[in-house]
Amino acid sequence: MDALTEGAARAPAHRMAVAVPCWNEERRLPALLAALRALDPAPGAILAVDDGSDDGTAALLDRADDLALLRHGRNEGLGAGRNTLWRAARERGFPIVVYLDA
Image 1 (cartoon, rainbow, N blue to C red):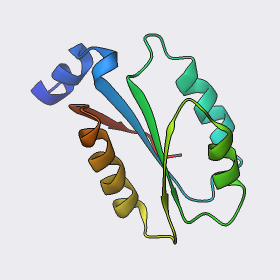
Image 2: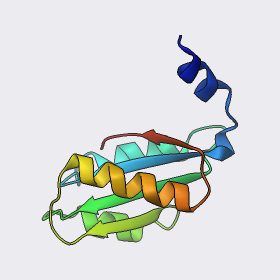
Image 3: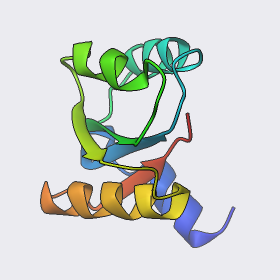
């Protein structure tokens, strides 16, 4: 384990934001969100970006009241989604961002 991994492993969960970039993930998203909600200790925040999905992803995320939802008007790609989430996590004061691709 390198120093970065060890530091993340020791960091308090409330200081971590889980960042979920989503594009057309309607089928997989319910299981992923259930797994995140079951974490103990819970992360400080769950952030998701809908990257211009054209399936039911946006509606599913809209119904989730325990996450911060960001949107791209059109599909901008995984890198853009991760960058949007990183900025949002940092603006909210989270020093650690853990990416979990839907």
